[in-house]
Image (cartoon, one colour):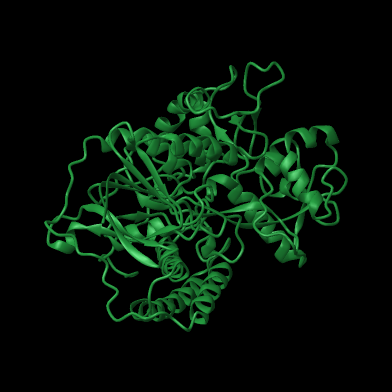
Amino acid sequence: MIETDFLVIGSGVGGLYFALHAAEHGRVLIVTKTDAAESNTNYAQGGIASVLADDDSFESHIEDTLRVGDGLCHRDAVELAVREAPGHIRALVERFGVEFTRDRTGEGFALGREGGHSTRRVVHAKDLTGRELERALLRAATAHDRITILPDHMAVDLLTMAKYGGPNATFGAYVLAQRSGEVETVVARATMLATGGAGKVYLYTSNPDVATGDGVAMAYRAGARVGNMEFFQFHPTCLFHPQAKSVLISEALRGEGGVLKLRDGSTFMERYHEMKSLAPRDVVARAIDAELKRSGDDYVVLDMTHLPRAFLLERFPNIFERCLQLGIDIGAVPIPVVPAAHYSCGGVVTDTGGRTSVTNLYAVGEAAMTGLHGACRLASNSLLEALVFAKRAADDVRGTRAFRPPAVAPWGPGDAVTSDEAVVVSQNWDEIRRMMWNYVGIVRTDKRLERARRRVELIREEIRDYYWNFRVTQDLLELRNIALVAHLVIECARRRRESRGLHFNLDYPGKDERPAQDTVLRRGDGPPV
């Protein structure tokens, strides 16, 4: 048994920032299922939205967020995040040594503009902001004497007092040590879910392989409220290339003047939105999807060739180099792009202190639903959300009262044996992701959703049988989690009988005239189980 004060599951910006502040109140253990740097954060290109310019205002950033969120943002969460953002930018620089790109004077930040923003307010580190954040925060966490990081450890399930006849409160988790194959018991006063997104539930995604919705799945199984899973953001511009996997073409390229065009060179976004290529992501993704279905083409292009080559090399060095490696000189030819699953606006429902509906269980970042994003996320509000609510949660855990049964039951493998049928895992994995892409993608219908529901229920039954008969592995645990997350997305989409933000249903193309409501699910309230 491993004992600590605070257990953090995940090592992206939310988990690391929480750990660094929670360590002021006790010992912190971070478990992460591969290398500590491998996270959605590490792949974030754009930046952090924050009001720093003299011609910007909190009111403008709030209004942009609310407008893009399409009526479902929680205003209290929006105002907190926007108003606290500048302080976190300063802390990143002054306390943790984050090196953001400076303007030509060297005194201020070079601020970018992205889709949905009315002005320049995106602080960035060239075109690899997430990697710079991960570098600085991971270095600080590794050096901290109260923080321990366990790589190659994957959480299996949360430990809850409800299993011992007590209140529904967490006191740690079962964790698979992947090198030994043994499941360890970690006991903690409070547990933070910072597991990131669930992009791997879809066939095409900008996310790394670790993004399998583990936190949402574990929280739901533990009885926590999960909300707005129907709002999955498809990034409009991922690189279309046979040798490329999950290569994101940042929103910042359009912010600096990139123009979306059809393969014949004609523009099309003016037919969909007044902001043209800088329209919010849901609008752009649906527009590209519609044009591809109409034309039969495999991709559209993002044209940067009218911009100075020296500027492209300075502003987007990593994207420029990656494309060049694949034979695409973005200064000379347009970039072929397609939409891909990118970001979940839903997750484990939390308050503004990061608390979930299960006592002593917290969630942060993409695993959480704070209400900041509503029905569609404003670009570069994601890293901001992780910072703001991680710090607030770290302040809150100081007062947590520990729950723990007199004797903690160790993991019991029972009669489970090592599997010799790994093909079952790979087959179901592939089927779920194709089904979600085809039936629960950018555009949905009731018939497609019903087909998806029936199929995912059968797949989950197969997984349950497999799970209890064979020893757990990372592949099996991830399959179990993406199957549940897929089911949650389908169920939320079936319950929303309107089109709003990222959820577009051809059977209900307009918005419901009644006040907008979150879609909230909890185990025991009906399917999924």
